[in-house]
Length: 271
Length: 306
Image: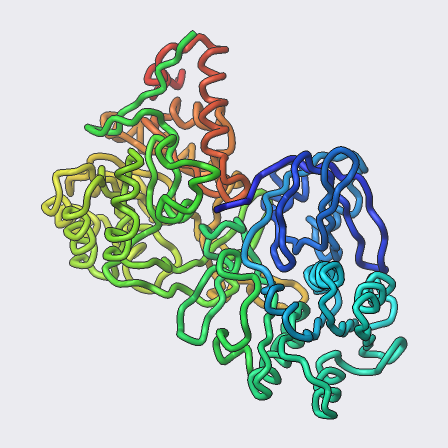
């Protein structure tokens, strides 16, 4: 059954999270039944320019007043996200959601999972972490960023992991907070020392996901990676967001993804 | 007041003039929940070739001012898969289906049509001779009147259903290609396809698209599309035209009808709003009511000029 809806969403809250990132809380009349890893297409302007909606992974869905709230975490990278950062509270946006296929949380809950987020890759990972915490499933969370002030929502991450006896590992490229270096290195080092995770759920920049894909296939760990591709429609018709799979097919990541198991991806994802 | 929104493109009658354009509506069944194909005047399929095509590498799309550039490269599932997996369901739903046909050689266009002739429920064909994003086929036929006439005649011989030719705005002689398509036996002309364009990333100092060039679509091209359609209408006033290029609203549709279009296609607007064709149709009806236009057909070619 298709659950997606194209609905008006009122901007009710915006929080600055870092010098470049912020969160948005959008109010909708009905509950958008999004699962961690699914995304929505959000209007980022009110005229014909910018023309296209932007895809954002859902960071959470929760009751809000007499309706529902959808939470997004956004990094200002261009005209659309700049508009979102300045749009007055109360602005009515258009949200088409939920879209795509998210993480396999059932499988993650049946084992001990490692959740890995890099930079603005946090939203689907945070959603997964808070959902797993609600169900009491144990996991460890690796959160990385270039600098300490780009580590987002540390308190919520720590609370979610802590609720199920899991660890939060912080890493920064510049070493200003947590362990110096990449989250992928921190994960691999612990694995080599004997810690075990059967599944990894991850979202972040391509080099991080590529490193995880290579590591996971070598170690026989299932890694589910949430990919980010430029897309115009989000519903599988523009074919802008195709991802190449190991079998040579090019599939729309908005429809078959955005979450893919690393082993399914073409070799260029495991350089 | 009741408005008769029906129209005809040559011998083909449509319940309303708003179609979904090729490459923006999949194979007709992707958006059933948001924009049922049977509610549209017609659905034009993603361009189909005899065998599946993988399309171009990524990045394939980039947003520009009030528009976007794409270089998908005609990725498609192939005509056989379409006939087996989609044609029947579209027919059962009562959708009017136009198959957009692509080939690297003339015989491949003919092969697509011949396969579709054995499928159910296909109302006609639109020859894609104007795709700017492939190395072979497409635009090379669309730019040369002699090749275009021969290709159209070859396809004409393969079907008695509606045969439209989608013209390239990139052709050096637009009216010449229009004449050629009609001489080859086209029932109608669709115009325009995307305009060849590029975008540059100033920080990386590289083209944004993997192919460097692509096709520009969206509201940015509407004034050009209107001018081109009007030019062809003036040169060939009896030939039915299908207007396309940046249509976002009901009044955009009226503009194309006045310039000489018998029907229109909505493309990039579907990427913004999957239900855009339905909204546009409703705005078109509102326009007719407000302007006391009882029959939509009365607007066709109704531009007051000179």
